[in-house]
Image 1 (cartoon, helix red, strand yellow):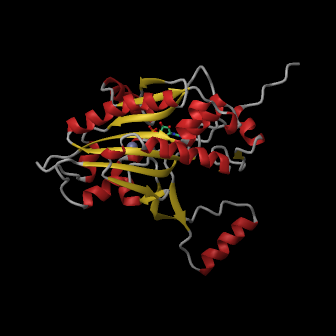
Image 2 (cartoon, helix red, strand yellow):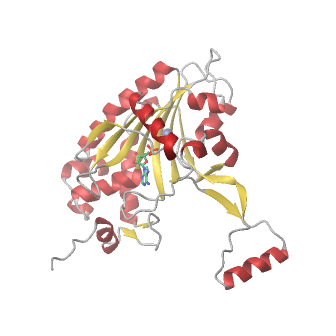
Image 3 (cartoon, helix red, strand yellow):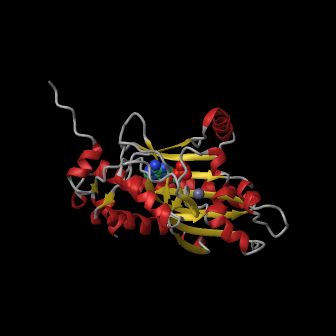
Length: 303
Ligand code: AMP
Ligand code: ZN
């Protein structure tokens, strides 16, 4: 009998690049893995550094009220995660401990908190900008990073439940945001070339939930609102989106009431880099030993 080839995920565990937690899509990262992540972030920041007006790092949770405003539950209820906590009295606590001891569901009385897990790195930014009042003439151009949560457990190491996105977000007029997105589609390819990764940009749609969701995906594609940078990671037939180039029109401007100087709702666009995915693509294509990576890749990341 032919032996089954060892999966990419198992190779990563074996080399202790990622560590198994027993839950698919939830992994500890090695220092080596994190070093590549932060070197990629530094590399990414050399593109368009002079255009950024501001940088922010977000915690992995966002205000529940802003999560509700985002409309995420309308489009992606299957991916969302909310933080629940114990808010009871002594006797509730006794009940909880009893459930735990008897192996019953102890979570049923947990109450929703004011925190939702951030589903997309740029969501917490919009309410912050809205709170500042009318945008300046040249809008905003923010570099940010956040851990994100999506409930999509998988054995594909590139599909995690908790992962980081580094993003550039442009907020302004339709012209400013479209120009930004076009520039970044080109820059994304230059970045992938410098990292010697096979890549292809293609139009894409988000995984909208349910029957109505299918139509939303079709419409998103027809309007070419989303593009992805695809790189083979776990499979050659089905490459993985390592970067996304999104134009949200004035949807978020309207939802959070971000205003242009002329009083109209702002348009927004973002480019998102999947930090774990890009790191995994580097390990996949250049080998599990970073010291043996090609000189060109090493000079892009190690300088
Ligand atoms: P999206 O908001 O779906 O366009 O995601 C932005 C970027 O995050 C994608 O281009 C991926 O690189 C990355 N990403 C999305 N989902 C996951 C996931 N489940 N695990 C790891 N990275 C992800
Ligand atoms: Zn975004």
